[in-house]
Length: 160
Image (cartoon, rainbow, N blue to C red):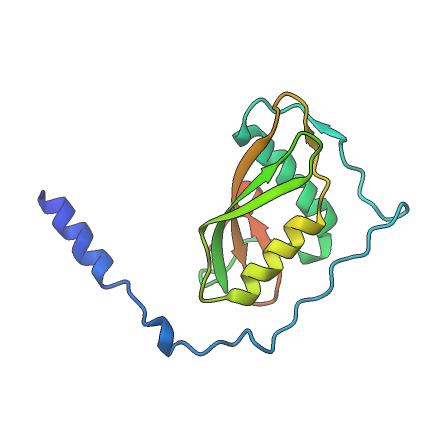
């Protein structure tokens, strides 16, 4: 093993937390309800996406989520300490419906946040239909503030 590898492992070994000792502050926390979407309040969303790759589609999906959840978007740069950070894969079919969610990096210390993100993603369907793809799995990083507001890495304003 190289000296850089040993250094890296020694740094990572100091980054552990005993999850059993962490008290959950989320059990009593409730998030604001999702906005009710009607014909009059539905955001103007493109019925289809012209993306040719998952990376391109990610921008369309993030814009779609932001359009539906305007009051939940954290304005400005995120602070250095966040409530949770999670990486989520979302499978979208040809019609823009959510087929599956798969956490690549779940914020397990914040199960309420995980549940709220999943609820928001599912409630935002249908997404722009991937016109140039038979289906798409896109990945985004959720940056979650303790206020219940968030940014997606795709459209983030940065972090201090």
